[in-house]
Length: 549
View 1 (cartoon, one colour):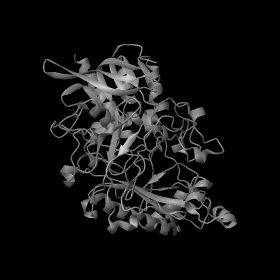
View 2 (cartoon, one colour):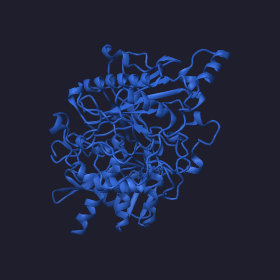
View 3 (tube, rainbow, N blue to C red):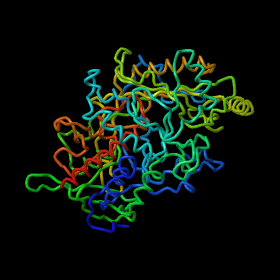
């Protein structure tokens, strides 16, 4: 179905955490807004499989996958051989001598990738905004923590974030909207191990309801967030910001439509985005114009669209890509913990979140207890048990509910070998070149992975979980969930793509409002809350300018 109008005050491409908050603010202030989404609208009560007997095999019900390719693979360094991914059932998960690309974990749909995120809602460490001036690495953000604090609070209220009284290095003016979740029994066991090493385990701040809020029930602790929440108690964008957008009556949302090009014209020496080309769900091409165009497709698809539209800034679009630096160790505990119960990450060790070059790498990190992939009997059978026949069945029965994991996510520093471009030889169904991802780990990331591996095993051992049955890390596998940086924000147009208000340098009516604009990745924090805060701030700044005439 084509758009109802030929021209809108603003067109927003993408309905996730970067697009929906921006659209809401503009529509709530009387602007006519069009939102274009490449994927479908999912009905939480019907689409997800957590109430089905075969839920483990179904996964998240992706109905529209956006294609991408991968570039060169990084040779593996034997010095870090102990970081290889493996499990008890199959051994090494990558038997080659090069880092293996698995998947960019992106979801196309109303609500974006928050549809299958694990609900984490983090503010960035206030020091993470000043990596260059404080630690002489990467770059500084052109804005500070205080600039985002009111927008963090606004987003937390919309989502219904449950969190503790205080999180280190994140000052706040008001408490979280909801009380924190209690630690699961498995996390309480990990907490005992943390205390032996003098570590504090803090309840995580999550967009998962701990009590009735926004007409939704509290979480039932099924631990199945990545499959999609069928109860609306997880604060994904489709059940939080999208209803607010729709309530304005000023925003039209089109699903299953794909934007292939943004058209730019030059008048009186000034470049201006005049509109865009998109295909509807029947494959028909359309053109629609807008006074403002906002791109919020994520740090892979946003640079793809801009490059395909021949919109660049000093060849910087797609550069400074940052992926997820991740490690996790899974172990069996002799006591049955029923570790499949709870929320995916109910607590955090923040001790190493503030950057500190004295550790041997400059970036920060955070660690957490989790159930890993041990949520159902199938995962135990495929990952943690070997053999066959009766002994195999007995082994699965013996250890089911005993697996517990400690994981970590850390800073990823930009490097010249890590970037997004397009593949001219591979095109999608609309004839547009697909995104090409290339990512290499630097020495900082490798040393950080070593650090997280050692700490995770120390904590598991101190908790009584001594038999390691799986290790997974980004040393040898690319499976990115958090990605950033391909349209860097900055004041200097020679070194950045968008300005501090998220407008494209040289094209004042074109904005980018997703994690593409992050100058640095932060110390392992989940990015969705910061994306939402940046989006709300960008909309606020635009509205203030428009009110001035």
